[in-house]
Amino acid sequence: MVTSGGVSETAIGVCEVSKTFDEDLVALAPSSLSIRRGEFVAIVGPSGCGKSTLLRLIAGIMEPTAGKISMPADDTLAFVFQEPGLLPWRNALGNAELLLELNGVERQSRRKTATEALETVGLDNFVDALPHQLSGGMKMRLSLARAIAFRPSLLLMDEPLAAVDEITRDILQEEISTLCQNLSLTALLVTHNVYEALYLADRIVVMSTRPGRIIDIVEVPFAFPRTPDVRASTEFTRLAAGISASLRQGFGERI
Amino acid sequence: MMRGGRSALSTGRLGALMNAAGPVLLVAVAGVLCWYLLSATYYADRPWLLPGPGVVAGAALENFTVIAQATVITFVEALSGFAIAAVGGVLTAAVMSQSPFLEKSIYPYAVLLQTVPIITVAPLIVLWFGYGQTSVIVISIIISLFPIINNTLLGLRSTPKVLVELFDMQTRSRAVTFFKLRLPSAMPQLIAGLKISAGLSVIGAIVGEFLIGTGGGRGGLGVQIIFAQGQMHTALLFAEIFAATLLGFLFFSAVSAIGNLVLRGWHESAA
Image 1: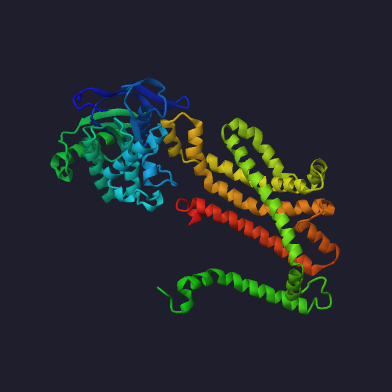
Image 2: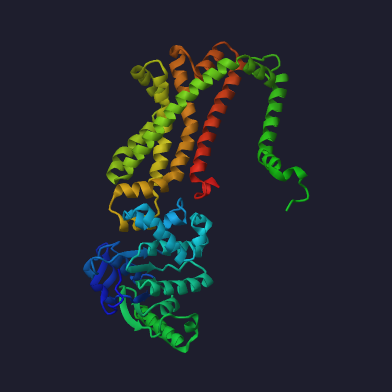
């Protein structure tokens, strides 16, 4: 589905897109963004900056008030929510194959794909486990497995690691990074964690509130595959400080 | 992990059973004892008001066939009423869940069905369905319908938003979302409604039998209770009250057990 050659090809085009709720509540002021194929883009910002709104607009969960979002017609996207969003009555395999099932993929083939996806996220020993038998981190892995079993070209993630503990978060960040590299996914991650954004992304979109808008776009220079050592480098710290400063500035203007 | 004060009985399966059933049995023994003492002292000269436990047990044994047959009749009526109410209630809730308009137009009538005193409509029901089991079943349906409608509707409306969004992104089919997401999500509430209605359906059947009286010929527990009352056979009356209570309890337990099987492993209520 994803051609390895077209790195500079645009996967998602967001052109002057805005979203207004209830006539006058501007969740997102007109914003533009172009995401290249195979790129990992993180969106950081404080609560209420419209980052989730932007992601939901791209996912088609909601319609923009104005502007246009374009992506190739044959692209498929999978969405990972902040909560794992698993069906509690289905075991891991049943959950992993859900998106394929809803799209009419025939049983045997979806079983196979879902099993592979569970292996990819390291849940191959928990195929028959029900969600309540899994830890918070494992539930998130299962949620990821469900997304990648769908073989999407775009992976949209809305603060997927906000609810897991620090250690699990570090490990899952590494796994998400590897996963997106290996599957050549175009990924869009919403997070409020600057370090998470820096570790995972090629580019970071910095947003601010009232109205929600893009205030900065930062290129992250570290090469892939990234190792946890990146987090300890001076460049990492410098970039984190810079982004934190933009966030504060965006916030300060309004206080 | 045993605490010092506990006997060796509290380990093992028998011990676990004793721990669970112990308090209940204790209350039962104390209750029967009080009953016995009261019947043997204050009511000793008026046994028709409060016969002792032994006399009641005697009456139960003596009339075992009559009580058993009546219990079976009442059970069949209650089960029929329950089954029809379950199917009808879930269907009604499913229809209502499809649109706010449908819900607003149907729900008030479901509430009315619940609030109308059944005694007042019973003559009408008898007029329509005759002095027979049909009327009894209809009354049982009316009494057990509302908890099923109400709880199922609550369940169908409480599907987690994140799952609804997940499904919306993949399918436009309302039927797929209903059967693969909303209905299974509603199972805990649906089963809670069925559990309430299981007991109610037995009450409904007995109330129905009361109202129809002996006109129905072969009678269930309600009819037998009226007979016993008419004959001032208080011991038999007690035995039949126990039979009715036991029937309701067993029916509720059966529905609970099936519910637990369905929910086992994914819902806290079936732990």
